[in-house]
Amino acid sequence: MIPARYAASRFPAKLMQDLSGKPVIVRTYEAAVKTGLFDEVYVVTDSKIIYDTITEESGLAIMSKKEHDCGSDRIAEAVMDMNVDIIVNVQGDEPFTDKESLAAVIEVFKADAEKEIDLASLMVKITTDDEINNPNTVKVIVDNRNFALYFSRSPIPFPRAKGEHTVYYKHKGIYAFRKRALMDFQRLPMLSLEATEKIEAIRYLEYGKKIKMVETSVSGIEIDTPEDLEKAQAAWR
Image 1 (cartoon, one colour):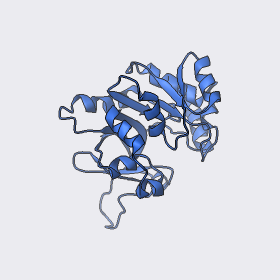
Image 2 (cartoon, helix red, strand yellow):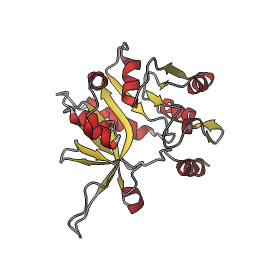
Image 3 (tube, helix red, strand yellow):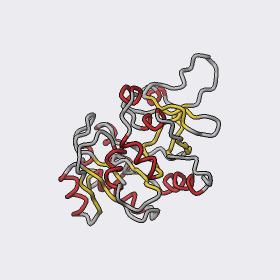
Image 4 (cartoon, one colour):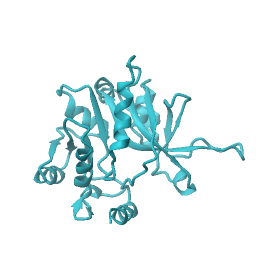
């Protein structure tokens, strides 16, 4: 499922921007399909423009029936009556989505015999101060089993002890959910931490859900700003 909102706050209409001859959302859809990992791939959107763009490319799209504040709510509505066990959420602004990373997230559930894991997601090491301090980059800290402890737009952990080797991880916006966790999410109200940070993954943590983080070396380019689009266009060539 690829949630796709037309009116992005930081970069309106970013999903319809041209990326080497096709809109960003089409490039992302094609990348997800190309992995060959999924029974079906859908774009879930509130925009007739995006819906028509995907269907004109012979893709599958679902129009949201309600207004939604986040991608998880949008996907939950779309899959409510579908007979599925695991749903993977690929962000619409990730045209460089790769098979290796998605396969690693799906594999988490195959190894989870006790069904302890509610969600799985990706993290990638970051080393530049610019990205560590950039509020558009969501950071994650994990426990010794790689379960998420917290997500933040601030640098976490804070390097109070100078000289310590501090590792920072960026949260990549790809999730795999058990359907029950997704259904729980859409009925639970937003709490203060999620409202403050504007990071939907925090809601799962605030209600005690277990998020297994998988490290990947594939960073890709998420298109949050016009500058990101320029980077994506250069990389695509």
